[in-house]
Image 1 (cartoon, helix red, strand yellow):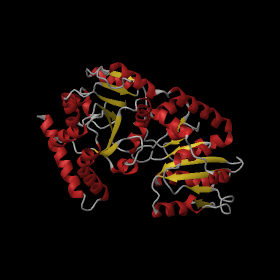
Image 2 (cartoon, rainbow, N blue to C red):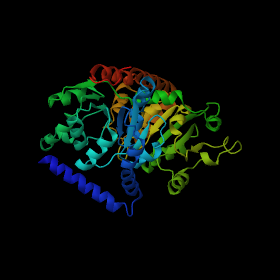
Image 3 (cartoon, one colour):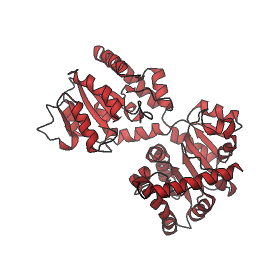
Image 4 (cartoon, rainbow, N blue to C red):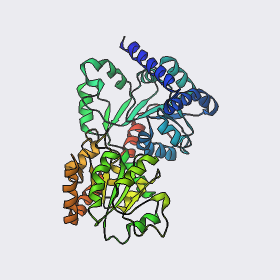
Length: 420
């Protein structure tokens, strides 16, 4: 009964996306992308090959699962990779990802589309990354005895599965051959509801940020902006207006600080709003040259894809989003040993809570708290060094998750996948 209700809700959701596609670009991209999926599979799936299917909701989950994808690709090249996305923000960025043999959208979770997709994709194994508990897909994978896993998952009591009215949805979690979770709390919670095929392996994002650090780009223009290290460099990443309203007034009043700010949105109106708040000389990265960078105090990163390399030039990081829906990626900064500051909306992020607990992260309830913490750093630079060491050690201790997962897959998979 509840499965029928669930399927009806998915149909209604699909219909709403179709209606929205007439005036909403993202909805239109989703609709057209899903419409093309079957054709992509017919054209590109090799019926004589074995595919490991990875599904990521969006770009963030893809980056989280990327170390596993690329390690499998390297160690087991005789298996092909099928990568699916639900969100355009993931697919459009990674549709030409070299390490996957086939990349496409995942169709809506209705029985007809599920069967069509699995028939065409014919995966030997399915691996979901962190989220996306599509009931019809999971039940069909289980019915066909296709080993199915979730990696870097994290569970909280407030999720639907664990509510009295949501217990029917637990059958989705019982479809996995094994659940690889981030922490003991998740394992304990699942155990309370009878799910014990669980391994606590950690978060593959630690492996990913270490890979990114090793591949980080040298950015000479930012080196020139930073100069000889006479001023403290604060890197503010993925900021929104509420973050900037806290950061910029402090920066304006403290010439001993240089600011690199990489806003989450880089459309013209937002960039102009940032510029209007700045009371010290600034320049956009896209407009820099050897002549106009040396005398600037604020550098605005107005292009995507650089932030993970930019953090290496800072001493302190501010992570945006904490005064909105939730903070962005703290580990991108932590991998360089930067103390991390962020707003109060961090509760869903284990690494943020860990960093606060061990003294490498600092949550800020408001602008006053930001002023207080920055004043401490300026008055005693040794605090920055000590917090940075804590952060670096935290990242190091939590790496190696990919290998843990692959070892368990090879031990638990009963068909010939992962056998050389």
